Amino acid sequence: MDIEFEPIKGRYFTLEVAGTSYRIYMEESGAGIPLLCLHTAGSDARQFRHILCDKDITSQFRVIAFDMPWHGKSNPPENFQTTEYKLTVDGYKSVVNSVIAALGLNKPVVMGCSMGGRIVCHLALDNPLQYRAMIALEGADNLSPYYDLDWLHRPDVHGGEIQAAFVSSQVAPQSPSHFRHETLWHYMQGGPGIFKGDLHFYWLDGNFDKVSGNIDTSLCPIYLMSGEYDCSCTPERMFATAQRIRGSKSILMEGMGHFPMSENPTLFKQYLMPVLKDIVDG
Image (tube, rainbow, N blue to C red):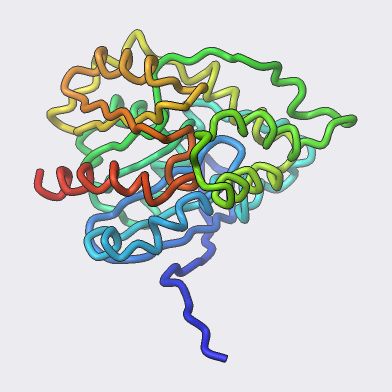
């Protein structure tokens, strides 16, 4: 039987972050400008498989997607069983910057979604010259919790199923059913307490609306993209963030929800390609 393999190459490496070692899983495809992809809270890098397989993108970009520590195929650190996972701004920045340094990426484009869409703006605020551009999918500089996080880690509740139930409302109603359920499946497989720990950053520790206006988009262009059906990082929050980040470019993605790259990859490509062309031409 003939098998047509996808172009994605997966591999593991050991990442040192602030004195802690992590076994990290990454996938990559293509060649050219580095495009580092950051997954959403509680999920993993499988969300970017369609981008990794898209020749229109990989012909110009070296697309890299990795599982954050504690997520997907990336291990938690040793003695994790004695630690409560809680993602912070500083910890998240350290992981991303350590991956960039370990892989030797020169001025990458960083595209993150949800919590990944928040951290890219933090990174641009700290060191804009290190990056070619930032793409913040479903990212805003100020968010608020809107459901009880305690439900996400209880012995009497199936963590994966409640996680998928919570985020199901964030998928656009017209997104194809098979992609919707594939996106939710990733959440059903998350480790205990990991989604809750991610939301500490996403909803609490990550707010930076008082300083987001200090981002210099002349040094690092920022593209803010939000799905019209996103009830988490709503379009209103995205546009408010764009007003504070002078020179940023805001894009409303009609027919999209909170997970554009996985819930409706064909429609997302229509919004993403002009942004990538703008970056290449810029």
